[in-house]
Amino acid sequence: MNCEAFRRAVYALVDGELPAPMRESAEAHLAGCEACRRAYLSERSLRDRCARLAVEEAPAELRERIRTACREAGGSPAAAALPIADRRGRRRLLRTWALTFAAAAAAMAAIVLLTLPRVRVRTAFAAEHVRIVSGEVRLTIEGGAAPDFNDRFCRALGYAGALPDLGRKKVRGGRVLRLSGRRVGVIVCYCSGRKIDVTYFIAHTGDLNLAGMRPVEMKEQTFHVASGGECGQRGCQVVAWHAGGWTYALACKSTEEIALEYAGRSAGVLPRKE
Image 1 (spheres, helix red, strand yellow):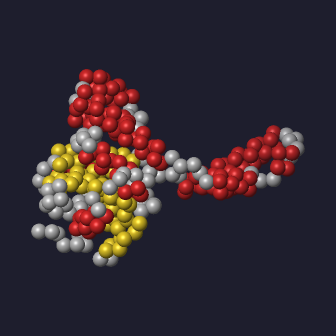
Image 2 (tube, rainbow, N blue to C red):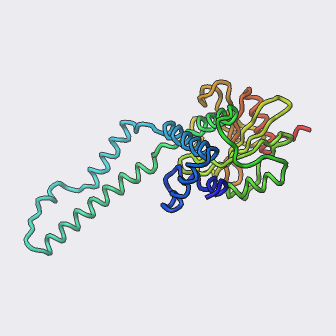
Image 3 (cartoon, helix red, strand yellow):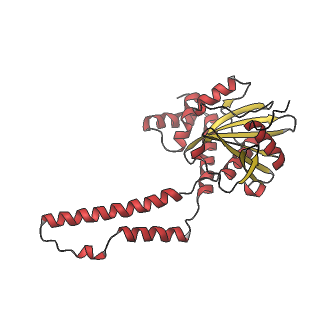
């Protein structure tokens, strides 16, 4: 396995989803390639951080709802005392128990699936931006002028939509990361006018949770904002918006007003600054 093949397989390797032969090849490559080893450790560190962000204890009310659903699905306790006179009776009782267990499991699964904790996007995106700006993260998609960069980025992400309008910002590069198993595209730009880095994120709308972010209306477009302590990084702003089945977001260290201006221009609701 060479470096290019390893970079395509690194997310599956980190998530433990790589088939055994490919995993052995990837591990052999890791043993002799320091650059890919650093990329692997960086991705694993990000996964572990996101996992910690996503863990929330189920509230007492939810736990009681699950217990109640299981009790209600379990039927009458008297069913356990039914006489077993022959094989047919035993089969009927076993079938009753199986259906009871399946109903209880389905009730619990339905509740759990609806309330599974997900990554708090506002904190994960802010943390990723800080890691990129500090040089902790290596960008695997080389930057450059559009449309060359756009084509390489869309192929890596498997993305067929329109990229946010980056204006005159210089594209430093990009990468594809995973948050709770979802693929998220990352584009890193540098705004020479204000001398700040701006990190853009792109993912399917259904894959991301914007809970806890404040809605802000601008020209009939709703943006979701988290600032400073709301996103876990002092001075950092995260702004997200939906368009065409995708969720776009940006993170930068600036004021909320500047971040919303960037988001408005990128979403096309504010005129591009010439």
